[in-house]
Structure formats: structure tokens, C-alpha cells
Length: 430
Image 1 (cartoon, rainbow, N blue to C red):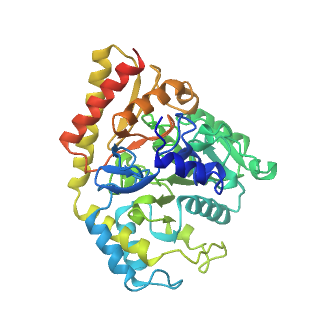
Image 2 (tube, one colour; image 1 turned 45 degrees about the vertical axis):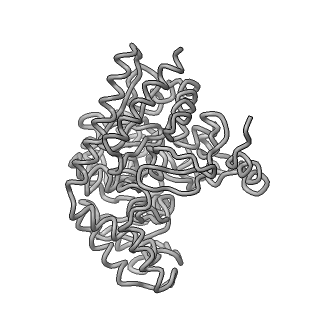
């Protein structure tokens, strides 16, 4: 058996990095085998350390809407770097991107930049508590809001993959203020609210969850949450780290016509660089220091390189609304082709799809919440992942992750993905 450079690097990494990776899902534990170490990316392709090329359908977990190594964004980054990489002081570009986001996202009247989606969600909960004077908040089972202590309770994504949804190190004191509800179940929310009357500061969810695989909201569900929160004085927070600027210019809240009180953002607003943000109604955001008493700070917040990349990306999306038509068309072509293959081969799986996001679940049962997602055959998914990888298609290395498409997927590349998909399905069922 040939020893690849990725294999050598992984063995070396395990000597210095826990598990050999800096984020759990990268370890390939859920799909078998060893992770591939990436050397470069361009357009719809990533290239490993052995110079193998893969058509990839993750796009750095969402932000590469225009494909990898986009010339426009790369030029903006290089130009910004000529003036320095970090100031720890205000810049004009921070105002530009903040103004643009308030124009694009319905719920955002004021916004604070941070360095990751995790920072954004942690801060949003803190602000909601400070604003309402209450301690408890509701999260949905299987929704992942980063690795803040209070969120690692029935979390999705890597927490499922690693077999530890309730992470050690999260104290009982922290966990007691986190209330859990199944996604798509309004009755469960009403029961929680009744049982914790006047104690709930916020309700946070991914309006379209992508961390237990892609799951879609049932008709009326998001509207129902909005009504409950209005009635009970609860701050409704949409975690749009994945869906913001991807499903529409204004994210899922624009697509579904439901406006939350606060929104957390990330990934795309950095154009691929590390960044996050949280924003919302003016009266809530005015509680953030130095305007108000809720403290949150960060030396690298509003980093000039990240702001340059993010502003370039958002300006393009704002001025080219046809991008979303293109993304939706790519998503439709790919998922239609997958469904045709499934039908042709006589296989029954569940394919959830919205715009440029989709997940193929290895079960024929409807997937509408965390419990139903966990019924998927993860062993079979692992075989499918390896079969696709062998054919030059790089998928998310977990059943419980959405895939994200980019405008760099041409009809020719889509055809290659569909051919690989059909061959892979035939292989794992032979």
C-alpha cells in the first residue's frame, strides 16, 4: 500500500495536535480512513499534498459562494495587506461593511464584529440576557451554535460525530439554564415557556439547520416561534452563520419572511477569512459596551484583512442578485440528477435540499428533526463518502453536515459529480 504525504502528515500531526486535527470533524472518524491534507484550492477544486484534485462540495463549510481563491477577493486581501495586517483600532472599512449588512439583513439595525461564529452566538446570548434581565434560553436539539459551554448540550455536527453531544467540561450550573426542544415542534416550545414563565431570555436556532445534515423548517414553524417570542418577551435569535447571505441576500429570514430580534453571522462576511458578527434591533444592541453595560471585546475584531475580503464579497452579492438564481439552478440540477439516479437504481433515500444546500440521508424516512436525522445509516454513508472520494469528489466527512455549492460548478462538473454519485451508489449496494 502506497504511503501518501497526507498519511505522513497526519501521523506527524497526532504528535502535536489533539487527534491530529484542529476541528474534530476533519479527523474522518465518521467516515473511516485518514484525513486528506489540503495544499491549495481554486474554483470548484481542492488539491491535496499528493497533488490529487477533487471537485469539492463543502466550500470551506459555506463561505466560498463564488468558489475557492476568487481573484476579486484575493486582490482585495493583497491590497489590504500592503497597509498592515492588524491595528487593534477602528478603520473606515468596518463602517462600510456594517452599513452594508444593515441594508442587506432585515433584522440588523446595529452590528458588532467578532472573530468567529462561536464568539457571535456566545455574545448574542449574553446581550439577550442583559437586555431582558433573565437567565435561561432555549436551543433546539441537534443545532450547533459553536463550542461555547452553554451550547454544547445536545449539539449537532462534530459533537454527534465524536459521540459526545454533552461535552465533558460543561458544568451542571451552565447546563441548567439551557432548555432543549426538538426542532419543528411548536407545542414543545409552548410547554417550555409555560414551565419557565418569565425566566427565558432568548430562543436561538438555525432557521435552516445544517449541523445535523440539512433540515428544513415546516410550514408555519418559524412564524410560530416569532409569535411565541413576541407574546412572552423572549429575544428570538437566528443563527445564520451558515445561511446568512447564502440562501438569499438577507439570509433565511429574508427567504422565509420572518424577522428575528437578533442575528448571528460568520463565514461569508469574511470572504473565507476568520470573522463573525452579531446584530439586531437598535434597542437591544445599545446594551453592548461601550454604549451599554454588557461587556464584549476583542483585539482582532474588525481585522482589516478580514473586513477587506468580506466587504468585497458582500458588495458583489448585493449588486449581483442573479448570483442566487445561479446558485439555486446549480442546486436544482445536482439534486434532480441525484434523485433520478436513486429512482433508476431503485434506492430509497431522503434528499433534503434548499437553494445551494443539500444533504443525502441514508434512510427512506422523512428527516425533520434531530431524532429523525439520527436514524440515518452512518456506516453506509461512510462507504458512500469513500466511494465518492475515490472518484475525485470531496464531500463533508459526516452524515450530519450540509453540503454547500458554489457558482464555480459548471454543467460539465455537475455531470461528473452525478456520474460519480451513481457509480458510488451502485458500488456500495453491489
